[in-house]
Length: 287
Image (cartoon, rainbow, N blue to C red; front, top):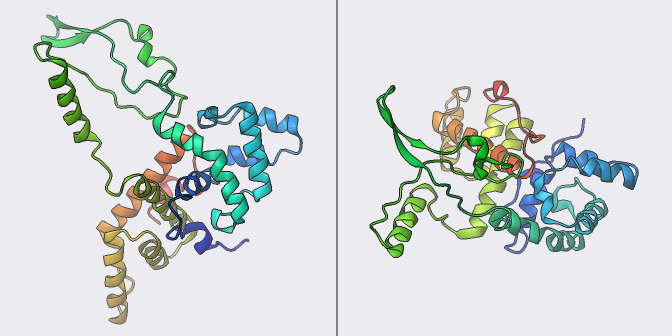
């Protein structure tokens, strides 16, 4: 059995700002069995057929761009870890994937508008004795059509607009509501992509390290989660005192569990309906 390369698979601390987005997407692509199968097809015809199973993330590319990416991945040695690729391969993949990462983050505003509002009306149900939002039949609402396989993430809820306010006041109120749910990320774009890579590292460590202590030390080293760093230091003290077999703290467990859940969620924005290769079923997460 091939030995797990902890440094190559989990150490993303020295990535440059120019490569971090592409490196992140590339590493998550390595978690896709569907993509791996498509790349391993022996003929172009079979590869093209298999590529139809790939998700909407790749719809940001034309057919020519997509097959150029496939060739670039093959030449690079996919699924080798990003850090093991040649600098030339890394630069080539940055140029291929840059548009797709922007498309994935921002979206095509014609196909995927930022906000969709369809008018409803407040109705009182005398039988149930409560107010509800009346609307068209769900099948007639355009915002409920064709969203499941887009790979986009949506917030669903109700909206009430007081028409007594002007546009400026309404927009400011909407901004406040938006920031309640999606506060600005400290550190900006690089921090967001870096966090996704840390989450992926935690998922891989959890799967490939069976020993609790080794898992904890690796996550503390490569991910630097506060609870895990504290717990790793505390473990060393307990070990010196002969109590190294005590269970991991709940805070550290919660951080690792949350990281795995976030890694899985981001992977599924790229490959909806597929599970990452490094994900372990919920029944195995406690081991």
